[in-house]
Structures are given as C-alpha cells and as structure tokens.
Image 1 (cartoon, rainbow, N blue to C red):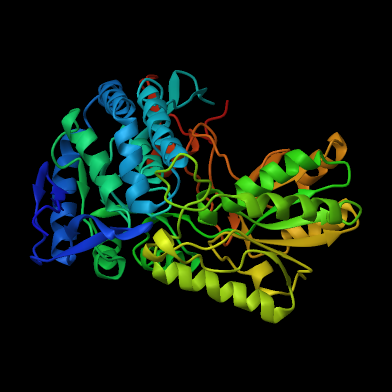
Image 2: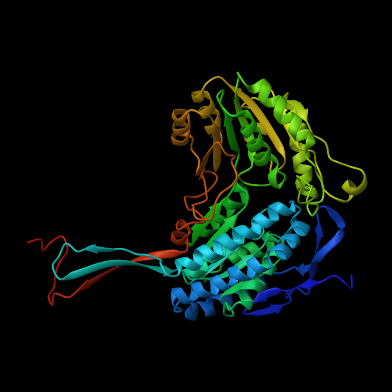
Length: 497
C-alpha cells in the first residue's frame, strides 16, 4: 500500500485529512486488483467545516465582478483542455467507461466551463417601462449563497461541472460530495480550479458515503440550495429534507427512455442509435435507451439487425481503444443488472442475446456483463417499467404512431425519448405529444449539448434544468428594482391619471 496515493479533502483552499482519520480504497471496476487511490472517509464534521469555509468565502466572492469570475473560469477550462488525455485516462480507470467516452465526459466539462465563463459578461436581466412617469424599472440576478452538490458516478466530471460552473459564475460558493465510486475526477477538477485562481473557500470537496455526509450537506441552515443527481428514491429524501426549511432543491433523477422506430425509418441509422443509446456507458446513463418501440412491419428485420450487431460489441477494459463497452461500476450494480435479467426471463420475455456475466481471464477481475436484448416484452413487465441502469434493451412492437406514443408515455419518468422516421408529420407529432424534457429526431436518446437545458418531467426531476442559461435560474434569484426620480410619492395601480 506504500505506493498508493492518498487523496485529501479540499476545504478552504487546503488539502486536508478527514477528522475521522480513516480512508477507503477506490478500485478499478475493470480490474479490481488495481487501487486507484485512498480517499477520505469523511464524517459530518468535515462537511460542516467545508460549509463554514464556503459561507465565509461567499461574502467576498459575490462581490467579485462577474466578468472577473468568468476570466477565472476561462483559465480553468483551458487547464482542463490542456490535460484532457490524462483526465480521461484517470476517469476510465476509476469509472470503467471506454476512453472515447471519458474524453467526451471531460470535453463536456470543458464546454460547460467555457460556456459559463462567457456568461460572466451577460447574466442579463431586463429593463421595462414603468406605468408611472419619471420611474425606471429593471431586474438583476443575485447569488443564493452556499450550494451543496451531491454528484453521481456515471459522469464524474461533466455533471460536477454542470453544477459548479453556473453556480460559480452567479457568485455562489460550493461544497461538493462526489460519488464514493468516482472521487478522483472531482479531485482533478478541484485542482484545476484552485491552481487557476478560484479563491480559498469558494470551492470545497469532501469525499465519503452519502448517508454519512448527506444530512449535514442538506440540512445545514447556511446551505441555500442542494443540487442532487441520482436515484428518484434518494431524490425524494433530499426534496423532503429541503422542504422543511424552504431550501431550494434541484433534482435530476431516474429515466426509462424510449426509442421509437417507425416503418419508414432508416433501419441502419436506427440500429446505430439503439446500440449507442443502450450500450454506451454500459447502459449506465440516466438517458440510456432501455426501451425500444418498433413498428410491427419492420420489427423482425430490426431485431435481427440489432442482435447481430450487439453480439459483435467488444467488451473489456475501457483503456483499450478497440473496446466498445466497459464494465459495470461495482459488484452491487452488477448484481442488480443480473437480477433484472432474471426477472425478464421469469416474466416471459425472450432473451435474444447476452444475459450472462462475462468470466475467464481478465474478465474475472472486473464486473463485466454481455450486451443484452429482450424481445416479446409487454408493457406490464418490470424490465419495461423499472430503471435497470445497465446494458439491457427491451423491445416492444407497435402498429401505429399513436400506439408508440402511448407506450413511450407509459412510465413514471420523463427524461429523454427519440423517434426514427422519414415523415416530418410523425416527427413533429411525437415531439409534441411525448412527455419528456429532452427529445431527439433520428438520433438516440443520449447526446445532450451543454448550451441546451438538461432535465426531465414527472419523477425524473422537480422542474429545474441543468446546463444552458436555464442553469442560471437555478443558482440565482431575481430582484426587481424600481427607481423613482419624480421627487414625489407615486402609487402604482392607484395614481393612474
């Protein structure tokens, strides 16, 4: 263990050990013999110290001109860009997804940071005429204060950047708890921010278990907003805890996303999209394509095509450029995926390919499962309704666009959906009638860009959106300002003549 790096918490500009005096191992899910590092097993007192530092730093950071905050973020983005390959390699080793995807994850953090740096010279409010003479009206944005971020493991740098960068450009300070499974990417993000001039206390990080750190990060009265990405079950707990003190909460939770393939679709393109949507990131995306509705006239051909392609996907260590799909994140999640595969079989779905854990050789050191495709699925089956978060695709037949739309909407979630069709009328009907926060035409259910809002409806979210300028509304509050230079009392709605 002497050659294993120990990583510290980051509080008030310093790398510090947890008050618990304990650390935990983080291992590579593709090869559990490899220890990525030792990370702090933090306790509530560490979270409290981080919040205290953020609260103190807010007094000065909120007064730094937004364009100056933007200049710092621009330098952070440049640092991430310069170190992209190293950051991507670290992420693949700790999270498992293939290197081309982790390059995309880091690029998303770069894009978000550059984008929000530019917002430092905007952060627009409005001016509007007053109903009274000699009076001026306008609105401005104000920061909230200390923000608590609880981040997931599937996008270990992109999602923290989604949360951090809009919060910082608005003038807030932050405390982030990365997933205990992928803390190194957030450590790297903290280093970039610190070394490029983010002042002490403005950004803080504590690593460790959510049940231990969550209560302090959520309930401390100095925390003004909690931004959480994870399961709907945990998100409900966060929402209820925040509601007790009228604390703002931004929740990004589960998904059960659908790709619709109509009878006039370009089937080659639809197969490409389904494979990428279902098996990219080993299916461990909230936007993953886990459901597919295919028109009855082409379902036999489409199924044959996708099964043939799925069988050829190369599963293995994500650092190998030839690998198409990496491991599941850990044993617990692997067990969950295998449980749902057995549920699908027991419910009567037909297993077309996959369904087995990969073993032998290097596979024995990691958490690998075959890309899995079920057909003969019905809408009452659990594999159709419940989020699996693994490389499992369920295919259902439809006979019309209306039926496809009804099947798409038959879920408690509402994150992402897509349709493959050459009929513009069908495309516009589907984008209007399918109840999701994100919709794609002739593209898979994954592929969000940083300058558009990201989030969903129903049990996927609570109305807020990440990314784009919509994120500024999450991390700022509006103030309406009235300047009366008439020299006399003027009463709105009363003095109308």
